[in-house]
Image (cartoon, rainbow, N blue to C red):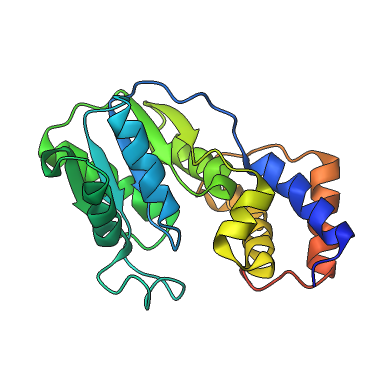
Length: 215
């Protein structure tokens, strides 16, 4: 059972992960694969609003998605988008990426190969991955404008949609750890972390929300 303290700390970390960018028309939508099909719904919705002429679905599989998305995250996301009304002609699939850096690098290469001129990217991820996705893209593709967005959901709504509070909080903590350590490894630009967010993160780690941490 998640305590009130843990929930409050997780809410603070969740709020920090959101970039609060306003979705706007861009050259392309790039959707980062994951266990959450809601990301495909968000990407399709932005396409159907006319915010970009092309969507790239990117992602292979992970331990979290191997069983529920056996054909690969990007393939399952593509199928979902077509069900929602996105035309097949507007979709590119990048099926090999296994982390956020590869999502960006492989999608960039695919778009260059397809002859798509990119000045700006509407980058779609899970809500708690907005900041990590943004920081990674700014490091690996600094010459394009990046708008980082997701499904407009509250923390409580997202946790309810997943059905596993502990897993969601573990993922929040893991995403923040990467924001703290990856810039020094050259994987993303640095993002200042407010003291109160860092303190909330440390309390979550102390409470055992550690399954998504890297060694």
